Length: 322
Ligand code: UVW
Image 1 (spheres, rainbow, N blue to C red):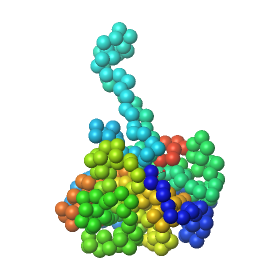
Image 2 (cartoon, rainbow, N blue to C red; image 1 turned 90 degrees about the vertical axis):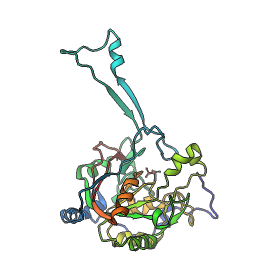
Image 3 (cartoon, helix red, strand yellow; image 1 turned 60 degrees about the horizontal axis):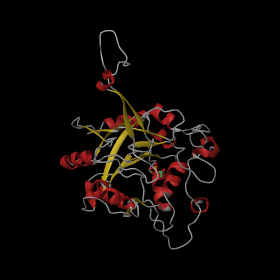
Image 4 (tube, rainbow, N blue to C red; image 1 turned 90 degrees about the horizontal axis):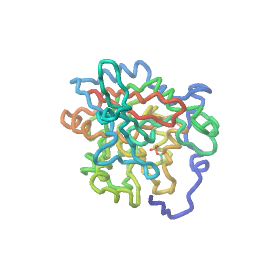
């Protein structure tokens, strides 16, 4: 990963001192943060944007024969066959009345290793998670702000696709290429849509096409493109009461902030401080094509991450209904 910076890197505690916070807004026991903005009215608002009934799934294939892109310290999921027809070549094979055979398999996977929802307790600084929970509640499994309350709730609302790659007339954004909330607004205007309060923001970069084009060289000087931190950007997210940020990159923001040199500062400013839920590693290609074909960039967005006790995140196959 590229970590060279022109000056000493500030600590997040100092860097985000004046950053907005939603701690306490939904009570001392809240574990879903800004998803609280997705009320029943927001579900109905999302349904109001269904035009043709075209259903597009947004999950990346797990166990893709062409490879699974992952954050550099993680490894792709491994699926192992436990039983198949060859099992019955053995005299020890289980025998069921009637003679049925079956196939079984299992998956060993990082919960953040493919399309996933991050729990609000997934990332923190200064010894405290979302809503002020003690970071030591993460030891051995998340006692607070795990994925479970988010999975119990589900995520439904109006989705809006911002196709940054197409807006910049590129097949895909470049490594370390950045954009701001002003760029998102300009992209929306070019698409003929307006970002509204409580929208679920879905940003396409198509950066992961480079993984499939380059193979292992993809990880050299690893720095994904994405949103860059500024206090103005965080205030904008706060003002529009954004519940959920969804991208097709591994970590939702530029890997190393070019100005401060901090790694993933928006994980702290948005997830830890505002309670914004992050959804990563989506495959937005079919959605982008459908949106461009019909000039329709808003739709119903539905996601149900898996319910896993104490987990830091969970796989998901989000759905856009246009
Ligand atoms: C990291 O935790 C590094 O990234 P993500 O939020 O993508 O899981």
